[in-house]
Amino acid sequence: MTDTAWIDNALTSARPQAVGALLRYFRNLDTAEEAFQNACLRALKSWPQNGPPRDPAAWLIMVGRNVAIDDIRRGGKQAPLPEDEAISDLDDVEEQLAERLDGSHYRDDILRLLFICCHPDLPATQQIALALRIVSGLNVKQIARAFLVSEAAMEQRITRAKARVADADVPFETPGAVERTARLAAVAAMIYLIFNEGYSASGDIAEIRSPLCEEAIRLARLLLRLFQSEPEIMGLTALLLLQHARAAARFDSDGAVILLDDQDRSRWNSKMIAEGLALIDKAMRHRRSGPYQVQAAIAALHARAETPADTDWTQIDLLYSALEVMQPSPVVTLNRAVAVSKVRGPEAALAMIEPLAARLSNYFHYFGVRGAFLMQLGRNDEARVAFDRAIALANTSAEAAHIRMHIDRLMRDSALRGAKAGK
Amino acid sequence: MLYAILCYHDEDTTGSWSREHDAAVMKKLTVVQEGLSKQGRLGPVARLLPTTSATTLRKNDPPVVLDGPYAETKEQLLGFYVVDCKNLDEALDVARDLGKANPGGAYEIRPVGYFTPGSAPK
Image 1: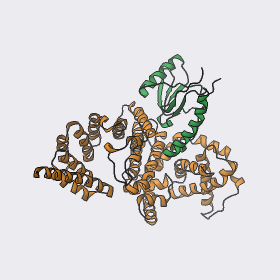
Image 2: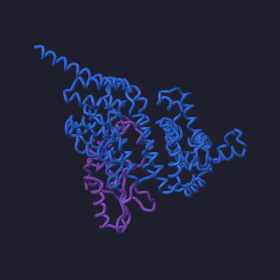
Image 3: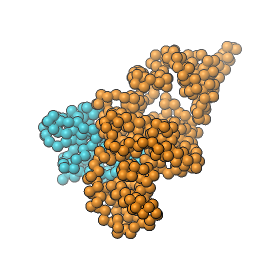
Image 4: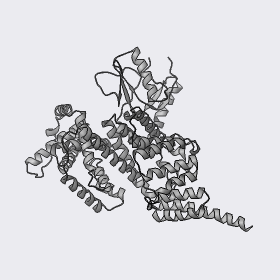
């Protein structure tokens, strides 16, 4: 670690709390962000000499607020940084502030900051970009890279999203229990979106985007530390950990997808798995199930299986049927059908997905799964049709390459059969 | 005299280590541990999972289970147990039994991620 890395770490950790509190003071996102930036500049000057403050977030809030108030008084004129002596005796003030702002206050500040990023008017990609910028503090360049767009385009996207949020009524009063629960659910969904943005990438892009998965895990842990008794937040954190644990095994050296059955399980991250399993264990005690907990439980059954043959598909089928009730969606049914194919065979599974055809007619995975079931049933011509459709709908070259592998196998099969028939 | 050495660090920092970095740190620690172990001086070593996985049992009457780590500052860390349990419920049962024998204060229950039993003299 370099000399200043600890400062970067401290600033990143303190950011959500500090920006959240500054937003409550100023009720304006730009002012809050600028105040935080100014406080960071001062931290970079002061901390290497004076050492880290006992509570970096409280220090940054205090300094950020004072500088911004000075700026506002001066009519927004650029002011030079005050002498170090002027900000050197912060300890007492900091202590008072820390006492006044108890944990619950901070909690709602951070939740509010996350919550304004999930404004329902904002499309998902803008929600994610805004959260990465405001809450995580990634710079525009880093975010643009993750989304494979130019910096200018991303800058514009974030500016637009911010303007939209600024126009909306940001709720500043302390939320009631019902409101808090609703905000928490919206924020959890956004964190899951950030994760999926990283998780669904493949090939070279997977490497570029894997920081999104890590950032989502960091935010989920943050949320869990603020809301320690929410089983769904435990479930969400567990789900992200268990899925990300497989990252190193999900692609081959050419960036092609490796399916769960074929992954080298020794490359799974056992530390993340242990943490994910412990969190589910903790969540289950509450006997308040929810979609994240169920999905985490499914991921846990995969994580617990030492080989693909050890997978408890019967239990996975049951969990998916519970998820179908909680969150009815054709995609959930499609996933359940994969478990059904392992427990009751491809015929039952195929029957299960037939009714989904209309709703999933543009969904890559539907045709991939359908093709696989048909192939298992020896209905190769129909399988070929499904696979061709899947390739046409593939979102990434890795997806297309994976389906092509199935088609190659089909062609080898029929060539073999043709040769046998010819004899 | 046996000494316990309790480890403190910012879990945001250690949690953001890459797998390689983490492995490198553990390897360096193992070298130190092996030196002690050869001299028969090393007792159990444990690395705990993050505080997000913690549960606390307040030893009131009746005891109260709280999610999260032990967060008060008015009591001090006085000792610890390492117990093999099937799951959190079983660990909480053990903590309740201990609490009955010695009421007052609290137990924080944390899953252990890494453990070596050690062989220090009694």
